[in-house]
View 1 (tube, one colour):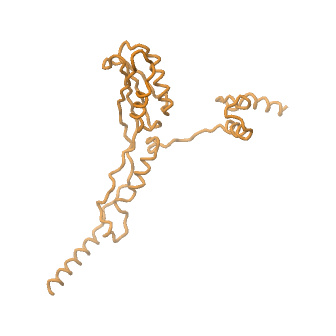
View 2 (cartoon, rainbow, N blue to C red):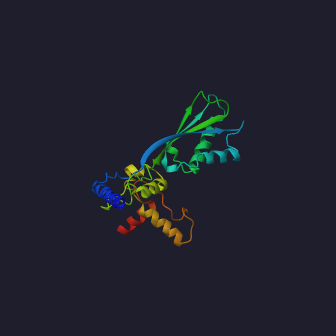
View 3 (tube, rainbow, N blue to C red):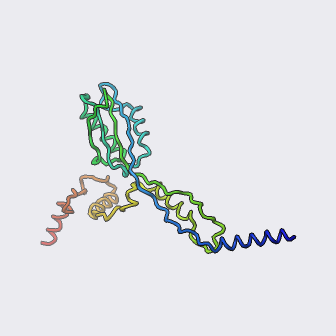
Length: 224
């Protein structure tokens, strides 16, 4: 009986001491934005300036996991003296544009490491590197002061990192955006009139000055 009491007393002291020790501060769970590089091989059959259905499907499967808005640069590389080079470059640029890649980030380069009809594309894109989660470094039960647990914020950070299209938005945001209200009004007008979007009947030629010639003439006539 004495041993049982002594052991119970010892456990009570241990619990009391552990409750008095402050829990270490919890660092916020945030994603790190990193830039990674991927090299994709491209092969054109002899005498062809377009890819076969199989090679095109292989190309798309290789870059399927790359988010197009996250692409920082694409270097299209070819070997020296390759035939039909301009057509091949234009074809690959069209395919990248159809996949959602901004053609303004595409560059071209000739390298001695490629031979024959072989080409390659070097992708550099941003990814969201998740924090060290899950984090169960703290006891979730012996949290008598109801302090923030070490695993708090892990689910939110990981979900945001996987859903964001351009990880750079996690660092700098998208900033202010300008919208053309006249263009939106024309699209709505076409929709209500059951006309196709962009028809020549009422779609304006949007310029940096805003508006169109039709709207300017009508405004001038009304002011007179």
